[in-house]
Length: 146
Image 1 (cartoon, rainbow, N blue to C red):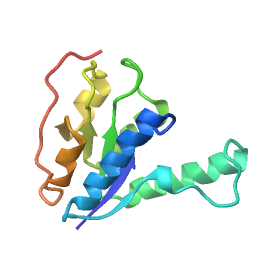
Image 2: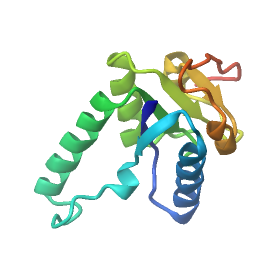
Image 3: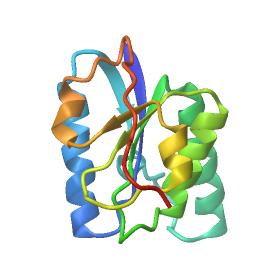
């Protein structure tokens, strides 16, 4: 059974709806043991934006990436601009030799660093419910890059 770290922005209603669909799809996947979603893992008693909150959140998220078997990352942002936190999580996972499964639902150009660093490329959140996380089949992005 696979442990998943879910990376993606959740700053507005559209992003929250997207990440909720992904959480639901991953929960339906019989090969996924658990999902760490930073959206659902705020540290109680800390005020968002404070130095203490930033340090503890950073340390928690990096630890969770270290513990995960795979990182699933949402790369649909505003235009072609990647969320910097999600980009960090993807880069950290890649450097840590963790497979990165990218979900790219919008019809935007992908950044070359994301396109070259991914292990699997998916276009629909619902496909995560059936993705074989035990064998991690590879698939690649073949569109334009920036």
